[in-house]
Length: 130
Image (spheres, rainbow, N blue to C red):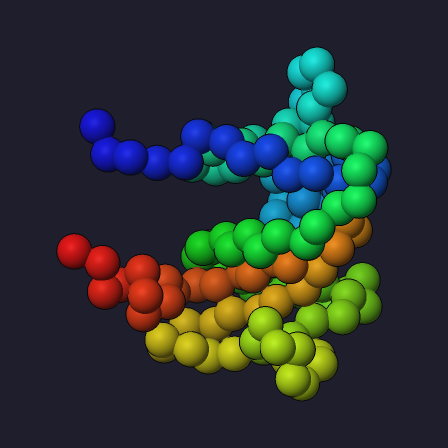
């Protein structure tokens, strides 16, 4: 069996707000609840579980590889909502995306301040792995 990520727990100040943002941005089914978590199920059987730990949130980086069609929908929702976004993690130029590796990519922040990356082609570091 190939190794794949089953789930990740992401801390948020408001787990409901963060889960709703993810389901809206990625056009996914409504989040489920289980114990202290709001669970967003991804298309590849993985999940993102949002929790409110009651501590200061340290921003993390989460990257999502999507199809070109999905990118069109995601980027369209971002523009429609007026979300600030950048072509790179340094946030050099607001309001655009990159065309790295023959695909497209964009960076934005979620409601908890986490840095999200949405890309259509894996980066060179991923492609260079044996």
